[in-house]
Image (tube, rainbow, N blue to C red; front, top):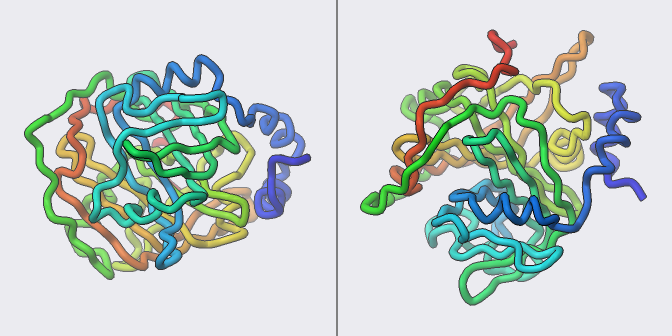
Length: 295
């Protein structure tokens, strides 16, 4: 049985990489292997993606804690202490049993990342995810940040909800070297990472962003999801101040005759939260895989 749905297959065929995708797809499994469990146990940040059951909008949200707050509690179960704060767009989703969720743990210190997708189960201390897919990705386009520190006295500010991007949010986006992208399909949800040199994400208008889709692992899970369901959520963060910018809307992919791909994202709503995360990371060392110029 294929690990891919029709949306991913369609994009793989457009890109001419179906055979390669079949090979890479063998890395997807349901078990959390010991090396993956050890990786989860040292992370201070987890990104969670899902559709808000009330509105249907897709969001990506950060959950932070002292290392150990995320851990494997079974061969196919990940448990998380805590969750998004009450004002977060996904606060309701993580209290709804059976919610399809995607999660991503990314370690800038080692340029490693791991994705675990499945079904959510609320717990007394937070939530657990019963895994449907567990896999790692290559370090491409991950900016290295050698260390982080917790800022215990940092208090989150009041979230600002916006129907369009203002100058401050536009500047935040164009300065970003990293963002996280939540997508959904009929069978579940997923969170992926996108990275590049600052400026790789372009603000086209107060309601539209675009970014180049760089060459990756050929699975096209994210673009395949968008082909099947255009709903998406973006999370950008300031790695120094902890401020976060969450966007929800719809995205589609444009293909050129030369094989290049550009994703265009239409913003429905934005949420900016000052000092949302109690983490301060070191300055970035940009990935050597980043193209020098964006398309």
